[in-house]
Length: 214
Image 1 (cartoon, rainbow, N blue to C red):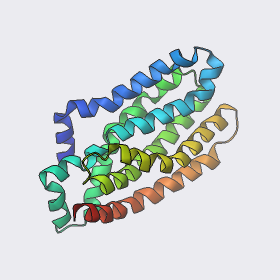
Image 2 (cartoon, rainbow, N blue to C red):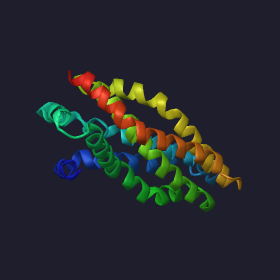
Image 3 (cartoon, one colour):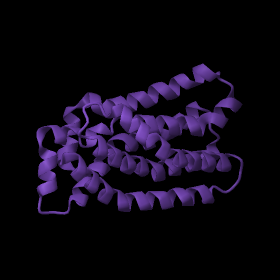
């Protein structure tokens, strides 16, 4: 994790691109649909979540791309330790670099899009539960396409359909909270998805890397 964080700090443009993408999309979106508070409050959860998914996709290739190019990925697969721990460390670094700024800025985005204050907490919880899923599922996709020269478009086509249920549950939870209903059901489903992906994705990534590297 320390090594990947040091490498990321040297590549400031790759580090800032997802954050700048979030800021641009969420600040320009009200200009496109109009400043009506009712309209903005209804679409706010979807806008924030779609922006979060797309910004996370921008930094996904960084997880294994550089290691594959310089041969470090092959060395990682040959280390006398469980590869799953190294994979989990890389997923954690991706989450720290892409999702943590989003969690910090989420209240500001909710304010810009006129989301009701009662739903702010639910939005933050959905992002906390959902962003690890994006990183884990994204790591599987990157592992499958890491050996391709131009795998970015294919990666998006692979991942976006898999993340649609997450988007549906997240927006349903925020909308329920905004209308005074309990968001417990969608949040419980998101928590279950997060636990499954965090536990199983390192093994899936390991298998995918062996196929791609060999």
